[in-house]
Length: 458
Image (cartoon, rainbow, N blue to C red; front, side):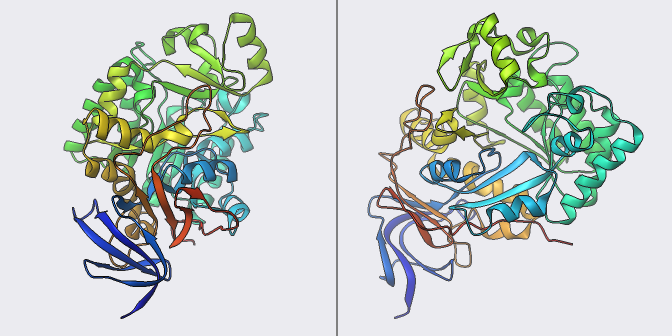
């Protein structure tokens, strides 16, 4: 009998690619799944999965918290690959180099329009623009320099082109189309936070989605619309309808959502420029400061906008959130970010919440639905651009041994708006490239098996 590096014993193995759903043992060697068998397998290390599901580890397409604090909390929620694809980076080599050999889980980034615009227009913001990159039209020369940075990032293996047009209202539609052309040239999906949100006429979600769909049709670029419920707000179902219709007519379009009625963004950003109450459909009492949990007032809003930082925004109707999570069009992604324990509960709890609430409690989704939305759909979105994803999001021989083992009757989120860094429960084992990063429910110290996932580098 062959001896594997690791054997996961007696679990319910579920593969969303093939529909495989059986009790089986999983043999892992060299960081990949080597065997699925109903017969006993022998391993140097054996992990018991009796009564648990063995699933592909989750691929988070929208994870801003790209550091150890965030990787640790996400691993405890079943995430094995966390990707910064909305904002991205202006220096792909440097971004990956900082994390290589130090990461608990896999990681990756896009070539970002936002940071490239910030660099060229010398914006004083740290993560999101707050000066010229947000508000000023770029000159023809500046647009050329922005595009050069994006193209260099794609040549160096950036997974996508990242956009946040609501954060850069000064970016013209022609500028955005030129960046979409780079997505088409390199077969890189354009991950876009669209220019507007909600039902506001002229600058709302419908017009903003139309802009993105038109740019994709004009250029031939693949399109991914980020967090559709937090740009759709009360008209999320209408935006989902538009996505579905564009898809039916042959556009390569996908989207994502998270299972919370609040979002979070930089209070200094253009989202909170004058008129934000109308655009977002909330007042000051709909904003809370993560560090203290306090609702804001006119005076504290002004104070924190000067100070800068993230603010939680309670603005998504529950019915629209449910529609997004339940839709077959959406992948699940967190839009997560924690800093020193403060932030939004979605960073720590997104996947356990979908498994616990939407599968077990309300039965709006099946287990296989959630595995498809959390692992297989994200891998499919990226595998044309980055073939490494053809072996992620699956449980089969030859696939990467990025696996989440959880109890379907116990998995649930614990994070809250007051305590956003509470880890989920119910994940018994989580493996990255065959290395347990969570074993018997305990986060493992002293391991860093995470690898940067890139498109081919030229």
